Amino acid sequence: MNKLAEWQLTLPLALAFAAIFLAPLLMLVGVSFFDDDKITQPGVAQWAKFLGDPFSYKVIADTLLLGVKTVCATILVGYPLALVYLDSPQRLQKVLIFIIVMPLLLSVVVRTFAWIVVLGREGVVNQVLLSLGIISEPLRLLQTELGLVISLTQIEMPLMLLPLISVMSRLDPNLRDASAALGASRWRTLFTVIVPLSMPGLVAGCLLVFASATTAFISQTVIGGVRLIYLPLLIWQQSLVVFNWPFAAVVSITLLVSVLTVVSALSYLGRRSGGYVHG
Amino acid sequence: MQSTPTGRTLDVEDLTVRYGQALAVDGVTLAIEPGEVVALLGPSGCGKTTLLRVIAGFVRQAAGRVRVDGAPIDHLPANQRNIGIVFQNYALFPHMTVAENVAYGLRARGVRGPEVLARVSRFLDTVQLGGFRERLPRQLSGGQQQRVALARALAVEPSILLLDEPFAALDRNLRLDMQIEVKRLQRALGLTTILVTHDQDEAMSVADRIAVMNKGRVEQFDTPVAIYDQPQTLFVNGFIGTTNLLNGKVAALDGGTATVALDAGAMLRLPSPAGLSSGAPVMLSVRPEQLALSQVPGPESWRIERGLSLPLGAQLVHEARTADGASLKIVEPRRASPADAARIYCTLAADARPTLFPRPT
Ligand SMILES: Nc1ncnc2c1ncn2[C@@H]1O[C@H](COP(=O)(O)OP(=O)(O)OP(=O)(O)O)[C@@H](O)[C@H]1O
Ligand SMILES: [Mg+2]
Image 1 (cartoon, chains in turn cyan, blue):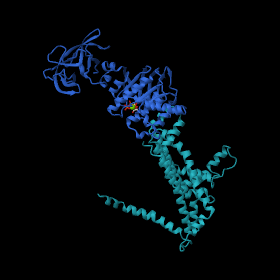
Image 2 (cartoon, chains in turn yellow, red; image 1 turned 30 degrees about the vertical axis):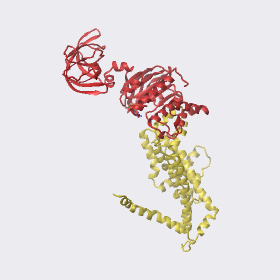
Image 3 (cartoon, rainbow over the protein chains, first blue to last red; image 1 turned 180 degrees about the horizontal axis):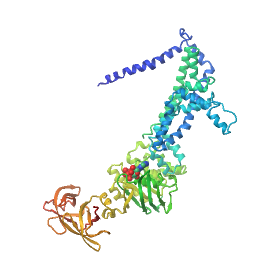
Image 4 (spheres, rainbow over the protein chains, first blue to last red; image 1 turned 180 degrees about the vertical axis):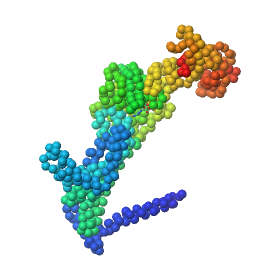
């Protein structure tokens, strides 16, 4: 089969991708350049309105910050978990991987409402803390950023753990022993050998968690409530409540661009640190 | 070279290691002298690596002790044992340069500044890799990586050196060079060394003593010559070198000497091992170079049917078959042997030291 024919074989898929992803994106960009919500007057008024409002920048910053906080929390919890997983005997690993993947098997809505039960005023967390006497009044967790980050950390955890575990389990186990035999403590081995070599997995995990947390509309609105405003909520209000589609398009493109910027910066760092795994 | 030619003793006492139910090492005892090179030789899966890993502190034993200079080290974690190890796959840190790899152990021990650089240079020069400091391990050949691994292990001046099949990945010429190199360094530093291998030539040429292992046990721990000439068990006999096995029966016992009637049809008087009784079935093991061919029959010769004769380097290998169906290999120097088909009697060469083993029935 010649080159041309092979190329032609990819055509149906390429067309499907163009129709499903590219066309709506172009339409989105097009719609954003109309001044009125009936989409009749071309112009840049919506962009001017959005970019001229300091509130917009606060929402962008909050959204990106939410992503950063969630990424940090998933690293803090996920990295030690990955280490535990690697040190476990094989049978325990099977159980652990099931527990790790579990959040992916549940519907977003179920997971999110479960967190409401856990975090609420009468929820599990408060009940336990109260009965232990650690706090005297119920903590406010729902509709706070803290509660949102906690629940997102659990929900996004598989996205951090799966790439991390897959990279770590390909590391030569002799490297750890070699490090110990040369006199290094466990911590030294962790920070000078294991962490640098697991960077590609860590970066991949951060990318996925960041992209997913910044756009997690359901969790953001149900647990964060309407008082915590992030870009996805803004898009939803503008498109389905106010029906100002051009403005919603402006916010959507902003979300897309800001997330993509962070993600590309991260993956650039990842590529610079990567490549040693199969060295 | 700053040398410590006073090596340490290494004593392994009754060491047993279990993986779950399976015994990987089964009551191994080795007393290793200061500065000695001991080869662990044995088939795959006999527990050589496991034994090293216990000594290095990566694996806990089920029973037994390890002592260095008489002091038990079993309670020490791997990073406090000061035992250098070179892994079969080298296990160089792939994200560090050659110099960083060699400096790793020094830094971990709190050595700082110009001292680190000086020692890294010294050991890289020792393994003749002075010009490769800034390379990454993946930019080196197998032999170079192996030398970096050696320099890394030696840089911290360990008290004991463990080498796990360090030459397995190298081609023949390089392997010979590296064997000499390792031996030279080990001598200069007076390092007590254990070398794991399943290559018997390597064990013979590098080691002062060889421990032949089988199924987690040490079958014989002796000098290469003694292992070759006086194998204590049938396993050692079969594992080291090539050997011919001839069946027979003890016809008479007279003090330390047994008269053996070979099934092939000869009567031989041989030194007898302890515990043989008259009439017992035995097996005679004799090396190919300890057999001779002759034209004349005699009471100590047996008739053979000659097979192929193949030149092998400076030697000639004859194949033959005895009357009772055992196949023999006989090796002679080439110039001394006209391949003449009339020599149909086989006998023990003058200096032959065959070994008798009781034959399981
Ligand atoms: N981590 C492990 N878990 C369970 N069994 C193991 C483990 N490591 C080794 N074994 C078993 O212990 C026995 C000894 O293994 P070991 O690696 O010491 O053999 P070896 O003599 O080094 O073999 P080779 O020459 O192939 O390297 C083998 O039967 C092996 O299957
Ligand atoms: Mg091994």
